[in-house]
Length: 598
View (cartoon, rainbow, N blue to C red):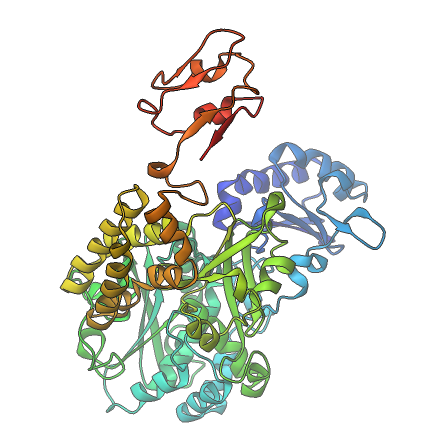
């Protein structure tokens, strides 16, 4: 009889840090101690708190081990699993201000988790995603059974409408309305598509759901198929997600074996099956019409709309497209009711939202919060604040299509309408935090550089306009900018927004517009003062050795790759600014703080 379970994170982050070796080490040690009949090792999806991975949790006591390596495993097995004494030095510790100590903390009691509400992520880090029985044990496929045996298609759509669920992939279009448009089309061939082509820099929400709870997406797609009258679905997942693909393939095979995909599901006469299609990493294929074009075997380019996919989509047939996170909410809405879901969030943004929290933040990882939670709560409480005593400067939401939120708007509620009102957007859910050492002009350039590379080139405003924007930003950050360039940036952004063919082109200027709106002074400093206030843009930097602090140790001159530093032993050195390539190696090398950058 199993008395303990050892859950080892099998998400991409922990896997890249060696969690598979940790899992194998546990299995080998447990076998060596003769405990294989008493202790079970389970590979799960992402627990969420990526900053302290690899993570191992032992149940039933819930002991939370963080930053584990395979070398730690023998001691944990010997002391904890054999002798019943948790090994405190490997346990996750948090500071308890009430008693001014660091104490072992369970995963649920961490500050990272306390304000979260897990709906889409409810099974991630809880079940083995490669075992359908574990999904079924937590009410898996109960929602599908309910709709097929107790509800009419129109009842399903009405439930989704009443819940207020909006698409979690970008624009936030009401999911029930999209389904109702497709259902209203004449009977015939229709399709259900899952957009798992997650391309935003810093975003990994959909990947983690597919890795940790693939059956939730399969079940929801079958429900969507029943609601609109479709018998076939496609999951378009990027090929760079090998773990997600592997687990999807296993899940689809298991669901077919159990009769939960295929013909005559639950003996109701309803047929539905799902196929996988792999994307080649093109960012534009996150746009729904480009995604459909790619599934059809053509170059991934967007189509003019209307007609919208719900009327004429995949292979010219009515099609609904939702992203992974949207589908991950469906089954819980069916089982717990529309009112339950609508009770969370705000008036116009119901439910929860998953964010990939990254950048200059203590607790990087996956966060699921009720809509309306403020940015300050996410950064300071859930995220643990900015490391190294730095100040919060801005947060980027929505990836290349989003905008930067300044510190002055730190208390902005995170919901669809509030973010749009301040020049940003929800997007798929990337949330990149920036501190005082971040140059906002450089950030705008980073996202524009990405957009230029990823533009499909079909329409001139996006193909040419974004490149021109990038050229102007390059000019400014290299120290050659003029005041009129700032006005040109703004004018060009507005042209691109109004004239681009698809949503990706229309939102591409957002990082520039939002940084111009809230950090115009930094643009002016780059252009007028020829200075980068954050000390990031190399073209505007200069390094200087403070003579009074220099000990003449020669370390900087020996490390300089272009021999720009001269001086004799025990005497102050000097940097030749005409030779200096501004690499910063000298500043990193100096132990006396004698080198400064301006």
